[in-house]
Amino acid sequence: MTQTTSTSTAERSATTGYAPVNGLQMYYEVHGSGGTPLLLLHGGLFDIDQQFADLLPHLAQDRQVIAADFQGHGRTNDADRPLTTAGLASDVVGLLAHLGLAQVDVFGFSIGGAVALHLAVEHPDLVRRLVASSVSFHPDGDRGGNSEAVAEMTVDMIAGTPMEQAYREKSPHPEKLQDLLTKLSHYDEGFAGWSDDAIRGIAAPTLITVGDCDMVRLEHAVRFLQLRGGDVNGDFEGVPSSQLAVFPGTTHFFGLSRAPMVLDAVTTFLDTDPAGATAQD
Image: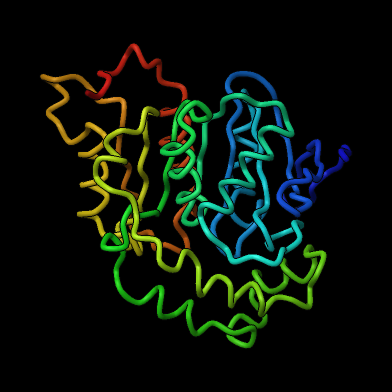
């Protein structure tokens, strides 16, 4: 099912629809046209509008952009299954098949970044370029505090916030907010992370973005970059195809809030001719 509608939050027009995947009616939007499609994947407890409203109109100026709401988020229904990176990635694969897309650029934030990373590792033919924002590839890359805070989260703790308001306005089951918070508190339980070899073996050129006071440790982001072939003297060795952007004065929650910096980093990376950068080994 598709329809043309205007999304008032971002004052933009889009083709919207619901893809039947894995027991979900997965909500998606398609904006703009041209070039390799760019897939946007939001973070936990966010949705398309909350995560990408300030970025999407600019990203769609000269490219097709697809954005989706994950299981239990935004306008997508929940299902009787836990929230895991592998499960959400399977939904995205189904969405891309529904849309008839064989390859996309992927820009994911936090949980969306983990899903984007999973796609790049497990479905390399689907991902041309990868933007992994505010996400670690291994649990030891995270600072303390975030998992503990999420584990204790209740509806009362987010009462009156834009996240609560957006959930209750958009969700097909607004009474299940606590169910979503509980699932997020157990997100990816037991997942040991990706090995160095798995990260090193990703085929897609990768842009890693992180805030300088993010939940992801800066040394982990640098290690991520090194495994992707970066952290070199570019004047002598050439600029690698994988890169790192650190946004100053930026926390995890506000990781994409400084829109001009984010847009400059992301669009420059996506639009760079691979022939103009040194491919990693």
